[in-house]
Length: 145
Image (cartoon, rainbow, N blue to C red; front, side):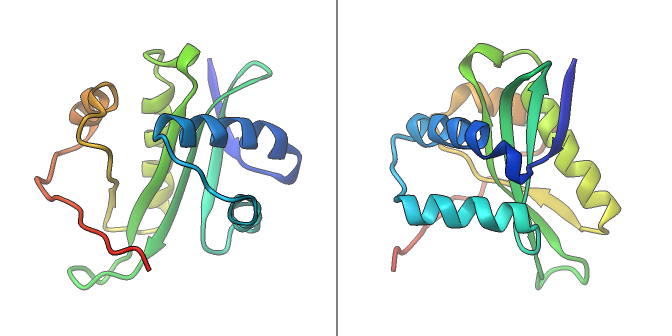
């Protein structure tokens, strides 16, 4: 059975392993200062929240989320920024459990909605997302500064 709990300082080694898997999946690299800062901000919990999914003593997934004010609602939006399940644990309900964890948190914190982005070609994850949420049809654009 999957257990999900907030990321804590003692989780740094397993968090880093999952984080590296997530970055590898998206074929990207993030420098060490950014990774260290990300972990510190998650553990601090003031702006970014994080949780790890465990099967027994094995960390099998992670999720990070944050809230922000919105112009279309008086309640904040909850942005699920990162979601990763280790390859050996996929299709076992871990991703669903992590999304449910964030959704429960967002409800208890009076958020208007939970939303996230994914790569268009991420068909495995999108099959899950299509079961638990609605595809809004929006396309993301970005300017890196």
